[in-house]
Length: 301
Image (tube, rainbow, N blue to C red; front, side, top):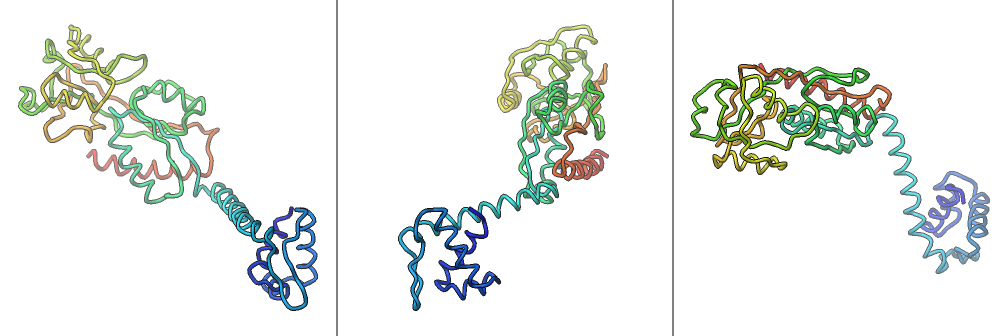
């Protein structure tokens, strides 16, 4: 069944007049009659009762009208999606980020994306290590990764963001609150709340290495995989927690972020993607990533 036959059927059904339908479609009336005959032959049913005075839909014609309209609407929608995808106005972009390291940048990015490209859909996954995200971009499981840490997949394209400092989150009233910076040796014997240890670059491993360099093992009071619970326990004084300077929107008014020193842990930060996966949609998103990076850098000054 041809699309033009369906368009002709709808025109005749709405006009209930072959001549008026022909004028509406800008085709000759015999062509309208022929196309109706074609669609009736294709369906094996009569769609119209017609005589010299009137045209009316048969029960089969009435039953076919609404599905026919919906079918054409679906075809039009599919065509629009295809055209927009070619121009990058719609589509799906999968973004990975580390909640404890890059959430401040992601907040800026998602705000800009919603303003500039509301037709694009985003799937955002968090709580991944820098290594895992780079592997996922390499394997086309993610389109973009926003991470802090070393680049281990040299084949990926990147946008550089300002480096971050590893820091400690202290509850209000803690003795570290009055310090501008906290030396790693001061953490000795302090109870800590930590995320589970997993391979790759992440906050937990960076804290462990910093403590090791300072000559002691961290005192892990609790190990929790849920970031919200980590924050609540920190606020209630159960233990110190840790994050990067690029994730300070996680802390509340009852907490303070203090950079760590001795050693200072600076973390290079990037947006990464795979050039082979570049689509018009992803290209539009990357332009916004660059704009978000400029805003983020200004906010860091």
